[in-house]
Length: 63
Image (cartoon, rainbow, N blue to C red):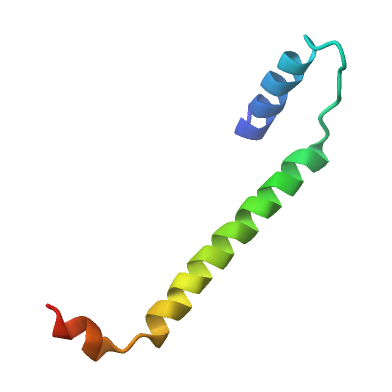
C-alpha cells in the first residue's frame, strides 16, 4: 500500500468516529501536495536568486 493510500485509510477510519462525518477525496491530497510543492519551490527559488545575486567578494571578505 502506498503512503498516500495509508494516509487516506488512517484518516478515513479516524473521521468515522465523529458525529459529523466528512468524506476525504483524492482532491484533498492532491491539493495539499500542490500547495506544499509550490511553497517549496518559492522558498528554494527565492534562496537561489538571493545567492545568485549576492556579491561573492562580500562572502569571501569574512572568511
